[in-house]
Structures are given as C-alpha cells and as structure tokens.
Amino acid sequence: MKYPQDILVRTTNIIEQQESNQTWKALSKAWLGYTIAKNKEEGDRMKYYASVIQKLRKELGLPPASFPDLFTDEDITKVQQQKEFRK
Image (cartoon, rainbow, N blue to C red; front, side):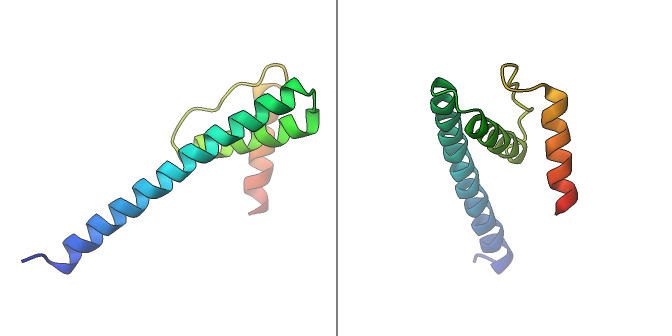
C-alpha cells in the first residue's frame, strides 16, 4: 500500500523536474534573445537578456555567465545584489 507521504514526495519530485525543464527552456530562449540583440547591436536588450540569463543560471545552480563585451562580472554582481535587495 502506498502511503500519502510517498505520493507527496513523488508528486513534489515531478513538479521540481517540470520547473527545471521550464527553466532550461527559458534559459535557451534568453540566450537566443541575447544573441539576436547582440547581432542587432541593441545594448539595452543585451543587458536585459544578460540579467535574465544570470537569474535562470542561478535558479539551476550554475555559475554566472560572463558577458565581457557587455559589462564586467562586478557590474553583473552589483545589479543582482540590487535586485535581491529590492525583494
């Protein structure tokens, strides 16, 4: 007989996997957006997508990405800290 707790654990794992898959898809789309913005030399859009990429990478437990042509790693860290402070 299955216990309710076992079902809850499995349901939680399935939800976490779905959220992770959605995050990976969003990360892929953000990289595509960043690449398009870079090709069109749209600096504001590049910054937007770079911040989205950093946020999603953090959610996935990945190290921050580097955007040397856009701004330094210190700038990215500063922006992330400001966003976390606002929460």
